[in-house]
Image 1 (tube, rainbow, N blue to C red):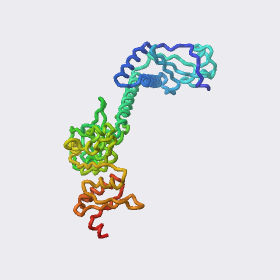
Image 2: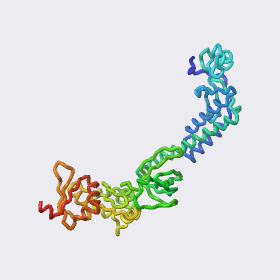
Image 3: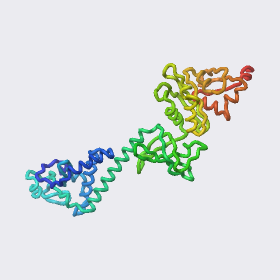
Length: 372
């Protein structure tokens, strides 16, 4: 049967004169919540369709495509689509050709006819169903907007309040507020700085790793150990970085202990290290305080690998740096009394320098190098 054929509508469904009121409410909702009117109109149509399908006298759950809802500012009306046939075998989906011609004199067997529905006869259950669908639509739209808002904050710095700390896993759950919208963030124990301690109600600054959609809204994964946390903190403290006069090229970090950051001047006449250190060390001091005493070495980035490695091994003095042919590695010679400083406690200084520059570093004291 040609069930999808469009039929001429000779009979009009009774309109409920609430179209203007509905659209006025939807526009108000759009202003307050930012939910588009068109989106909510579609949700209302879906709600009314579902309400009609579930509140039929014959208790038949007819297909949604057999219900047409016309909602405009002029009013609200509804039709059920049935197929005109010579012999009715399914009263929910078919109508006798003679009855169909009372609605549309030109209808032919096999064509669809739109039968007006009296919306005012809907029962309480149907109305409740419609209401729930609309409420759900509003919630989904709000969650979608909040998700979009927070997903744009990935790789940014946010401040939240500690809600609770899991006593077993030590995972921290944080409430983040942004422009009146609230969302939950998770700071896994693996993303927490060793030695830091927080209690419920404390404010905490975190770096956003990624945002996932969840049942009650976006779930934000955050970190306190990511190297970019250091980058974002310096962007807040250093106007020259925010203005693009100084560029952070790379960061190597062992969270809670030490970080190395390579910077370069983009504008002439700017001291990149001095800009990040700040007057009397105030800028780097503010970052160190935020990271609870984590040491930060700021060095000048260079295109010359040897110069870059030399700077990265700061605060140790370096006699010479030479590249090892065929390998992304270099040999570094330091004064004998600078060897332990260059290597660092448990090899940390050399390890961070290698991570910062991307070159494997082989450090030798001058006495050993002379002997060789």
